[in-house]
Image (tube, rainbow, N blue to C red; front, side, top):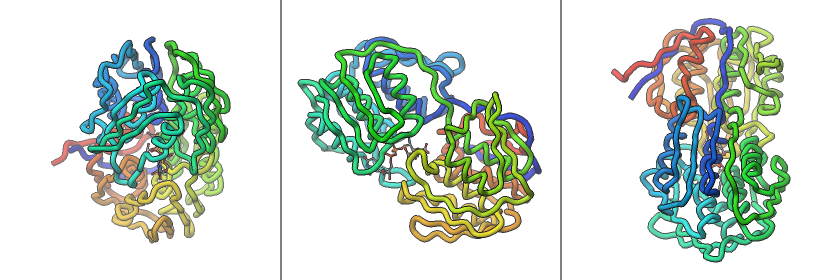
Length: 422
Ligand code: EPZ
């Protein structure tokens, strides 16, 4: 397994291009199962999770061609020749559950392995299943699989989620496009990835209103056509790299960034003493003084502070002036980066879903271990400004969600390299 070695190297300057959103691409790709016509995605990110989704779709009989070095995904599923999403693939990536809605809507049956939990939590899919039951599907959970049937097709229904779920909203939205009648999704997720999915489905002929608000209304149609659609910019990659100049000093421009994608995050950065200026090319970020101020953070569904930026924000706050309190409200175990940051000299006290960070003047490089995707990049951010070398192992976590991270950070002056594990 490879390692990444980061050495504190002073202020950064230059530009970092931001890729298409992993979490948009992972829901746009299964949408190809809804139509016999080709669906082509441009601005696709080159990530291992995208390859996993390609493998899954191909196992179901879809064609997926990665063109232009993987930035274009040309897909089509004239027929779905296999309706069983196997555990061997699903266990690698929870987003695999997003093939369930499209297969059920298109052909009236599907067998999808339950994804199982992951490092950050149990991550059940009960909301997805309740939505399909409300739409008339018969679900049978056995042998670790969901066996779903809707022989007469899905029916439009009111789906009222007890709490916000991005994946359940996406799965229900896709299924509703081919259901008979009208579906109203209440307490829907409002993330930009949901809006991007709705825009793509509309290009395919779906009749959708209200995406980006808490209520999405879908008028089912008999069939969907093809489309070509650009994947929206990755707001989590964007927020991650915005923190690099915040931690190291200097000024970096994030190409393709827009404030609308990271509104609450920018507000927090401003409170901590970091300027974010919107330019024609993207977002320019620099900190106003030598040290940032402590701030309190609570993660919430969009448009609140994203849980996927909590670990990265903690890396910044380790050397802030004062005490910061971070509350993780979305997942039950998303502070695994804290013990690793403590190895670098951070002062962090974790009590349940709350982490209290007392700023220290500087972190010290150390050997650390990546535990999940966003934790891995928070350790790299911390290493950018630490004294000495930080050696991050298990960087395969990183490859799931960050393309070319060494090249992108080197491009703005970071001292970082990737080595084969000794
Ligand atoms: C999506 O996961 C993202 N993944 C996650 O990003 C992100 O952290 C999360 O949304 C929240 O924004 C993708 O889009 C592929 P949820 P998802 O359903 O859809 C609970 C990353 O780092 N829940 O909004 O799985 C769940 O356990 C990843 O890129 C149920 O209880 O998240 C969690 O506590 C990590 N039952 C909360 O709801 C359900 O049926 C929010 O989960 C569904 C979810």
